[in-house]
Length: 144
Image 1 (cartoon, rainbow, N blue to C red):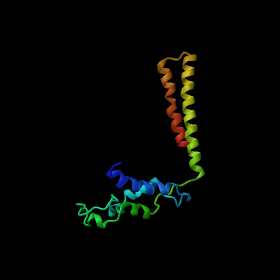
Image 2 (tube, rainbow, N blue to C red):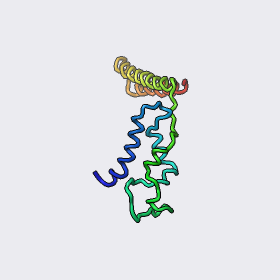
Image 3 (spheres, one colour):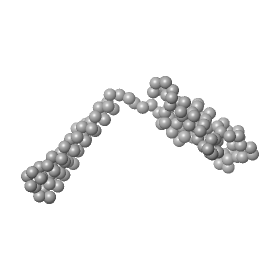
Image 4 (cartoon, rainbow, N blue to C red):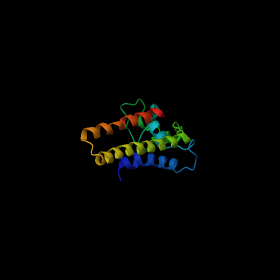
Protein backbone atom coordinates (compact mmCIF):
# COMPACT_ATOMS: atom_id res chain seq x y z
CA UNK A 1 0.00 0.00 0.00
CA UNK A 2 2.36 2.70 1.19
CA UNK A 3 5.02 3.39 3.75
CA UNK A 4 2.74 5.40 6.06
CA UNK A 5 -0.11 2.89 5.87
CA UNK A 6 2.19 -0.11 6.36
CA UNK A 7 4.29 1.32 9.20
CA UNK A 8 1.91 3.65 11.06
CA UNK A 9 -1.75 2.93 10.33
CA UNK A 10 -1.71 -0.87 10.06
CA UNK A 11 0.01 -1.56 13.43
CA UNK A 12 -2.36 0.83 15.22
CA UNK A 13 -5.34 -0.70 13.42
CA UNK A 14 -4.22 -4.19 14.49
CA UNK A 15 -4.10 -3.17 18.17
CA UNK A 16 -7.50 -1.47 17.98
CA UNK A 17 -8.97 -4.44 16.08
CA UNK A 18 -7.76 -6.95 18.67
CA UNK A 19 -9.27 -4.90 21.47
CA UNK A 20 -12.59 -4.47 19.67
CA UNK A 21 -12.84 -8.22 18.99
CA UNK A 22 -12.16 -9.03 22.62
CA UNK A 23 -14.91 -10.94 24.42
CA UNK A 24 -14.30 -8.99 27.65
CA UNK A 25 -17.14 -7.08 29.24
CA UNK A 26 -17.33 -3.31 28.87
CA UNK A 27 -15.32 -2.31 31.98
CA UNK A 28 -12.31 -4.33 30.74
CA UNK A 29 -12.69 -3.79 26.99
CA UNK A 30 -10.91 -0.77 25.52
CA UNK A 31 -12.83 1.04 22.80
CA UNK A 32 -12.41 4.05 20.55
CA UNK A 33 -12.72 6.54 23.42
CA UNK A 34 -9.86 4.91 25.34
CA UNK A 35 -7.54 5.03 22.34
CA UNK A 36 -8.61 8.61 21.61
CA UNK A 37 -7.80 9.66 25.20
CA UNK A 38 -4.39 8.00 24.90
CA UNK A 39 -3.56 10.08 21.83
CA UNK A 40 -4.63 13.26 23.65
CA UNK A 41 -2.42 12.52 26.67
CA UNK A 42 1.20 13.54 27.17
CA UNK A 43 2.17 9.85 27.42
CA UNK A 44 1.55 9.57 23.69
CA UNK A 45 4.59 11.80 23.05
CA UNK A 46 6.92 9.20 24.60
CA UNK A 47 6.53 6.90 21.59
CA UNK A 48 7.49 7.00 17.95
CA UNK A 49 4.64 6.66 15.51
CA UNK A 50 6.36 4.54 12.92
CA UNK A 51 6.98 0.86 13.54
CA UNK A 52 9.86 0.70 11.07
CA UNK A 53 13.44 1.04 12.31
CA UNK A 54 14.95 4.35 11.32
CA UNK A 55 18.69 4.79 11.20
CA UNK A 56 20.33 8.12 12.02
CA UNK A 57 16.99 9.91 12.24
CA UNK A 58 15.91 11.95 15.17
CA UNK A 59 12.89 14.03 15.91
CA UNK A 60 13.87 17.71 16.24
CA UNK A 61 11.15 18.27 18.87
CA UNK A 62 12.26 15.39 21.07
CA UNK A 63 15.38 15.26 23.22
CA UNK A 64 15.74 11.50 22.66
CA UNK A 65 16.67 10.02 19.30
CA UNK A 66 13.73 8.45 17.49
CA UNK A 67 15.25 4.96 17.44
CA UNK A 68 15.44 4.95 21.27
CA UNK A 69 11.71 5.59 21.65
CA UNK A 70 9.42 2.54 21.73
CA UNK A 71 6.81 2.24 18.95
CA UNK A 72 3.33 3.67 19.49
CA UNK A 73 1.85 0.15 19.37
CA UNK A 74 3.62 -0.64 22.66
CA UNK A 75 2.02 2.42 24.21
CA UNK A 76 -1.41 1.53 22.91
CA UNK A 77 -1.06 -2.04 24.11
CA UNK A 78 -0.11 -0.89 27.64
CA UNK A 79 -2.49 2.09 27.82
CA UNK A 80 -5.01 1.76 30.65
CA UNK A 81 -8.75 1.94 30.16
CA UNK A 82 -9.71 5.50 31.01
CA UNK A 83 -13.23 5.87 29.61
CA UNK A 84 -16.09 4.06 31.27
CA UNK A 85 -19.50 4.48 29.74
CA UNK A 86 -22.18 4.63 32.37
CA UNK A 87 -24.93 2.23 31.44
CA UNK A 88 -28.27 2.37 33.19
CA UNK A 89 -31.98 2.21 32.52
CA UNK A 90 -32.09 5.98 32.74
CA UNK A 91 -30.21 6.26 29.41
CA UNK A 92 -32.91 4.26 27.66
CA UNK A 93 -35.66 6.25 29.31
CA UNK A 94 -34.03 9.52 28.24
CA UNK A 95 -33.79 8.23 24.67
CA UNK A 96 -37.48 7.32 24.75
CA UNK A 97 -38.28 10.77 26.16
CA UNK A 98 -36.61 12.39 23.13
CA UNK A 99 -38.71 10.25 20.80
CA UNK A 100 -41.87 11.10 22.75
CA UNK A 101 -40.94 14.79 22.67
CA UNK A 102 -40.48 14.60 18.89
CA UNK A 103 -43.91 12.98 18.51
CA UNK A 104 -45.63 15.61 20.66
CA UNK A 105 -44.04 18.56 18.85
CA UNK A 106 -44.67 17.05 15.41
CA UNK A 107 -48.29 16.24 16.29
CA UNK A 108 -48.86 19.82 17.44
CA UNK A 109 -47.41 21.32 14.26
CA UNK A 110 -49.36 18.93 12.02
CA UNK A 111 -52.57 19.67 13.96
CA UNK A 112 -52.01 23.41 13.46
CA UNK A 113 -51.56 22.90 9.72
CA UNK A 114 -54.67 20.68 9.52
CA UNK A 115 -56.85 23.07 11.53
CA UNK A 116 -55.59 26.10 9.64
CA UNK A 117 -56.81 24.57 6.38
CA UNK A 118 -60.09 23.25 7.86
CA UNK A 119 -61.02 26.41 9.75
CA UNK A 120 -59.57 28.76 7.09
CA UNK A 121 -57.18 30.57 9.39
CA UNK A 122 -55.13 33.39 8.00
CA UNK A 123 -51.36 33.06 7.63
CA UNK A 124 -50.63 35.39 10.56
CA UNK A 125 -52.95 33.53 12.93
CA UNK A 126 -51.57 30.14 11.80
CA UNK A 127 -48.00 31.26 12.52
CA UNK A 128 -49.11 32.68 15.87
CA UNK A 129 -50.72 29.38 16.89
CA UNK A 130 -47.77 27.40 15.51
CA UNK A 131 -45.39 29.46 17.64
CA UNK A 132 -47.01 27.73 20.62
CA UNK A 133 -44.67 24.85 19.80
CA UNK A 134 -41.95 26.78 21.65
CA UNK A 135 -44.09 26.80 24.79
CA UNK A 136 -44.60 23.05 24.46
CA UNK A 137 -40.90 22.49 23.81
CA UNK A 138 -39.89 24.54 26.88
CA UNK A 139 -42.49 22.82 29.05
CA UNK A 140 -41.24 19.40 28.02
CA UNK A 141 -37.64 20.37 28.81
CA UNK A 142 -38.51 21.90 32.15
CA UNK A 143 -40.66 18.95 33.20
CA UNK A 144 -37.76 16.49 33.13
